[in-house]
Length: 224
Image (cartoon, rainbow, N blue to C red; front, side, top):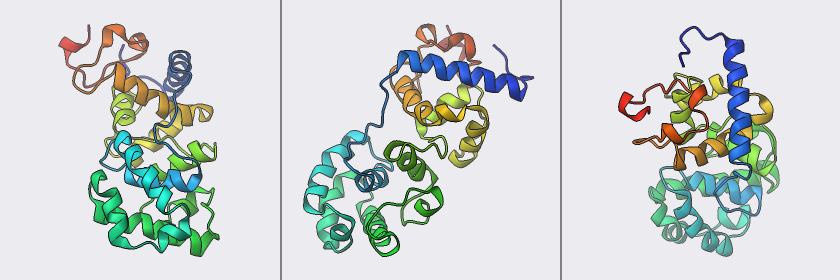
């Protein structure tokens, strides 16, 4: 299909159909980070930058066993925290971020993770992506579409955005994806991206969205 002259209304209708189909195939898609509280999720999401969720899930049990609360993590010995999270990469910067975040949660919010986007993005180490993850997954509030590598890539292939920048891509997706699908759109596209719409070898012939996708950026040899 071609989307060059697709109207905003038509694109929104197509996005709604895509969201419904994804829901049929991936009804149980969810955040792949392990967490038991909003605090654990915000810290795990910070650690997931340039690191796999699987690796983060290997590190956080020990991290939260040793420092189970924002206050405990804020006052932990920095070198000890660095040692625990070292395998997630960029461990010095991440330690600074998660301890700064924990400190801010204690000092500004009485030890409770705030449930507003504006307050979350003011925490050290928390950008819009992390804030949207926490809002949607921990609090069930749709503040915006989470745009990670899979979501950005597939949304561009679908013609929902042309933006490579995550913040700009989110703005486009927020306009066309129905708000009731903002949270699930990300989880389901991530699962779809891992199993079907992969980066290097998308399986277009096996894709439930084939008739709705212009396959932007996909080599002709991969479109069959």
